Image 1 (cartoon, each protein chain N blue to C red):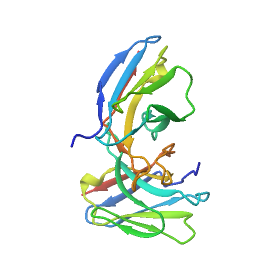
Image 2 (tube, rainbow over the protein chains, first blue to last red):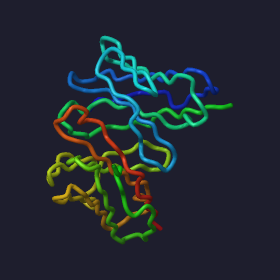
Image 3 (spheres, chains in turn cyan, red):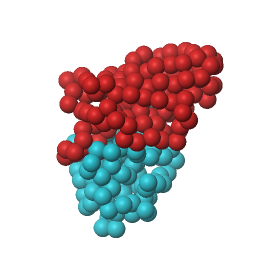
Length: 112
Length: 115
């Protein structure tokens, strides 16, 4: 199972762009890269998923270099409500099997 | 559509007791996974079930067991509770074999406190 490494915490201010980088050196060929957001006492919430290059949705962008050994979650113009823990996961493939490994995540604090 | 629902939301047990947690997946999702999240840590994989069969098991003792029913709902059972079992237990569902099959939708969790 591919292991991920992320910064333990990050600080930002409202309106800034936040980039959280995740390392996953032993990612497998069929692994996807998925990011989840979690607020206290709630289940993680899917943010974005990608396999290679760049993916963008209404809340974030995900940048994946050609070697896929790292990925960067980009949150544009963060607000106070983006204060949460962000998890980077690799795995899953396309079969549905989900023995995913969550690390400790990145604790993002957004200040006024 | 209702999301993943879990019950109970909170419960308190004493050491040595047994607990059953329940989960209903999103309509159309046939796979259910269970995770344990201890305060300050990321969720840890316990089980995954698909079509009533266990498809994966994490590094948890045999005191932990689960099953999936014909309607794809699931139960997680923990016997002989220990203080260390105090955690948020998360259930997640996903589809299988479809595009986007590897995206999990989590419930709000069941907060178990063992005294």
